[in-house]
Amino acid sequence: MFRIVITGLWICAITVLSSYAVVTWMPDLPKAKSEEYLEGLTYQKLKPLNIPVIAEGTVQGYIMATVVFTADSHLIKGLGLTPAPFVMDESFRQIYSDGDLDFRHLKKYDINKRLAEIKLKVNERLGSEVVKDVMIENFNFVTKKDIRT
Image (cartoon, rainbow, N blue to C red; front, side, top):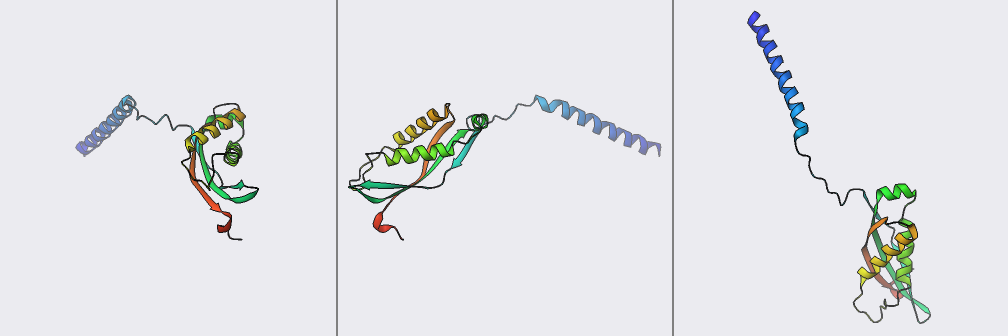
């Protein structure tokens, strides 16, 4: 009986010592590297925009665009407002007033320039570098005759 008690105490002592060794040894392991670029970014998808295309005094059709942007979540919390309405407004203004968009005479369009301009104008309106990137998820043109009423 004495041997069983000594063996049980021995097993308990080894378990306690090994647990203590593991706990003190673990903090010395290197930490996994986190992706610092994406840390603190908020991804937001806006409602689709319906932008009229007016030419020769009439509505020729509508541009259907879905805009997505990333913003610094730390700055959003500091501002107390979301940049979504500003991005939506600036996207509408930029596309609506763009004279290069002519769907009757199609040509290659520099969308990167337009997206950079939207980002710049929104950040100017907000007063800091809140919006990090503006992207287009969907960009279509629907003629007036193709619209169902």
